Image (tube, rainbow, N blue to C red; front, side, top):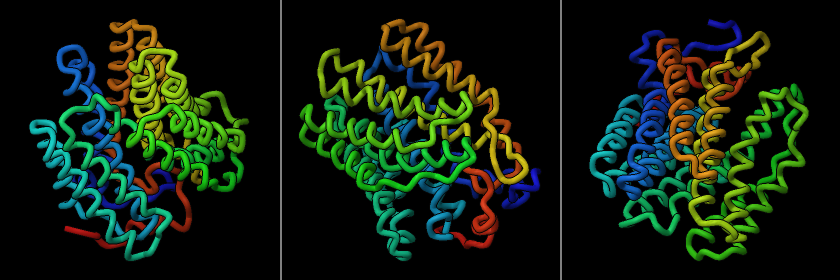
Length: 354
């Protein structure tokens, strides 16, 4: 184990349930594999699997993983196992079981957020409640659930991506711009409730406006971090301008924006830790990202066999990396290089809920 990282606890099985990203990201990757097989035969099942299954598991993994950094409290292994079981039940019985997963996630996040009065993180327990309501909708034709996930990406990605780019550029992160981040999310919520081109255009401008303030003089591989943001902005512009069929915007949003963002965070998990606390993306992660984004381009060009093949390749490489990761001790922090102040935080904190 690198001297720049901290191992939480020996015992791989114990680590599996103490680290939320391990079981839930495994669920997300498996869902990513299954999605294309349902696309032609059952579009509704395909949409539910990709939004509530793939994105839902990834959202839970991310929020529960960063929770100790916000509050010094973490979900217990029992709670993580319960969420995983509910996620699995939701695949067999969509609708209410999917909603229960999101409600339990919200109930896990809300108490520590309220207890520590970190109101700028209040979106974390609120977002799963919106997704729980969306999971009870009879169909997904209106595109509401993808927009809810996009709103969450706008809040999380608008802060995480410049931090990741700053790490790659070895410089201080830029000042946070919460007005633009939260504004984009609220505009996307408006678009979900009352679809209109103005909502989409304004949200896209809020996302685009943030990029010039980010550190962009980074190694070429690090520019892959920007591609999910690009797909998200493109999808919103397509929805605003209505020049192309809605499926173009939908797949740019879901495959490129949501899928790309999930892949980025997993690439950070698998990254090599180096002396001084930094991380370096592995070549396998870069190859997986390249295949994923090429699959989005192929899908927009209606080259479906190529798109599905590249998508499957991207997640096959990611699954292989995840299996290898599960065989290693749990290292904290998960998504970023080791920070001195947080090195022992997760070890010292007690279980939040059992």
